[in-house]
Amino acid sequence: MKPLLFALLFALAACLKDETISGYADPAAIYRLTELNGRPFTARATIGFAEPGTVAGEAACNRYSANQAAPYPWISIGPIAATKRACPDLAQEAAFFAALASATLAEVAGDTLILSDEVGGQMVFRVQD
Image (cartoon, rainbow, N blue to C red; front, side, top):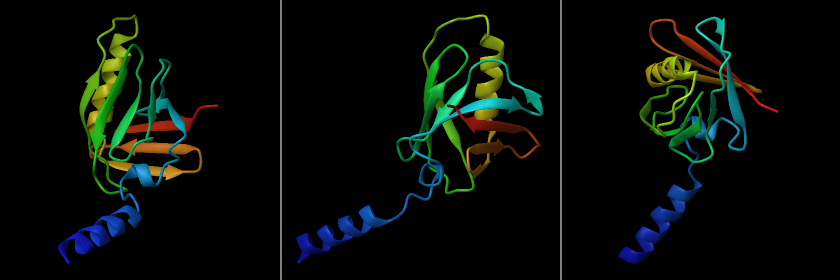
C-alpha cells in the first residue's frame, strides 16, 4: 500500500502548477532590463526563468544565477552567484545586483516584467528580440 501512496503523491505533485514567477513568466523568454528606478539602464542586464525556482541571466560583466522560491506575485532572489569578470560597467552591474536582491514584488504583463522593492525601487524589463 505504501508504494502506491507514494506513487500517487508523486504524480499529484507533478501536476501542480509552479506558483513562483517561473510559472507565470514565459520560460523561453529572456527579459532585458530597460529601466532602473525611473532611469534608462544603458548596460546589458537580463533575467530568465527557464527552471522552476531559479533565475539566471547576464549582468553588465558577468553571468549569474540565484534561487527564487516565493509564490507569485512575491519574489525573493538570492543568494546571487556570479562569475568574476571585470569590465567598465561594474558599477552598473553592482546596482543591478543590489536591486535584484532587494526585489520583493513581481508583475508579468505581456512582454513586460516589473520587479519592485518595499521602498519604491523598480526594475522594468522587456522581452528581448
